[in-house]
Amino acid sequence: MEVLSRILELLDEADVDFRRLEHDPTPTSEDSARVRGESLEIGGKAIVFKADEDFHILVISAACRLKSSRLKRTLGARKLRFATSDELLELTGLVPGSVPPFGTPVLPLPLHVDRSIMDQTRIAFNAGSLTNSIIMDRDDWYQIAGNPTVVDVATPNDVS
Image (cartoon, rainbow, N blue to C red; front, side):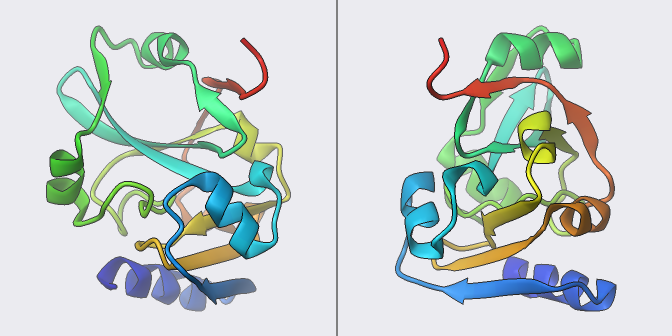
């Protein structure tokens, strides 16, 4: 709950509107969209990955999938892989599916955001647990998240 508290503190300090939901565990993006009553597209899926020697967070629309080759090329990385569950727990104290779309100061990792999120007017995300969600204006989130670098590394799920 420490991550959730940090997020709520940031949102309160910024004096922005948001909606917080407590719900049954939502291990998938589809589950989250269903319990939130929101479209899959506005879901911010936060992916922790390792590029060469450094871990990062990438946020993409839950309606998209990552094109690893694009991310590798964009970052100029030779090697790229997802963090393991153990690495995720060690780095963030979180389990898969609970990572929010925030880097420093919430999580100690650089943050990148895919244009698929920037195309939305709102963002919805699991906020440090599988049972807490936040839905808010995307522009407000982007500013509070520190105006992360925007990349083009995702493609809609229905496209090859």
